[in-house]
Length: 300
Image (cartoon, rainbow, N blue to C red; front, side, top):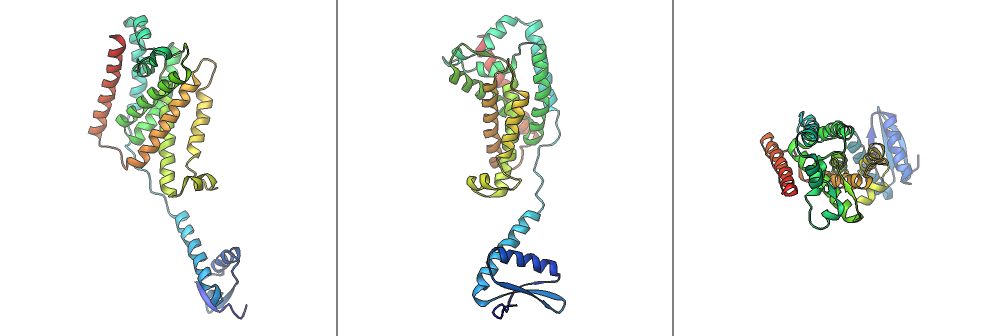
């Protein structure tokens, strides 16, 4: 024990805890010693190192409390069959277009032709989300949409989720049309479905950012498991597995996912808890009316 290390900065009942604090001071290059005192153990420092030792140990104790604190469970809307209803609606609309209505008129009026979108027919970016090329196409989107869409509905509410999917899918088709600006046409709900996946990642990333309370630079340099950008990487990896192929519009899927991610991040900050059921029902009805309005423009 150094003759100068005679001021106690910590008292521990167990030697193990005193050694833990000793490691902190050693890492901070602060001279100290550990000595027994009755049934306790003292961590001692010199007078000139007292302030630095207190600061280092206080910072360590604060980090320990943060890491051991149980995270509060996220507030969710709760169980809902909205995801299943979304998948069923896609199937029913496909049956209507193909076997009841004038399929040629519906497909020509609602398909996302890039050349026509950039000349002002923006509603095609929405109507194309309800059309599908064949039965396998609509079945795939109905199943995946029920999974991702259902998870998003449970998290933020069915009405809010439907608007997020509608806006993310529409934005994906719109951005894709303006960037490609070539003879290109697209149909399918997959852009909205990947918008739901992006929104799930965005909500999780936003909550991690709020929990960390750090700058974006710290987030990217941190080695902790709660880095906010990890959910986006996971979502893009999922897109690569499910939304990439020879006959798929990968760029539209990616733009939809990124639009959904931005929306999810915003909701994580702005929405402390999902709205009440009556508001969610009103939002659902409004989203359905918006789709009907877009189809009215397409078929007029």
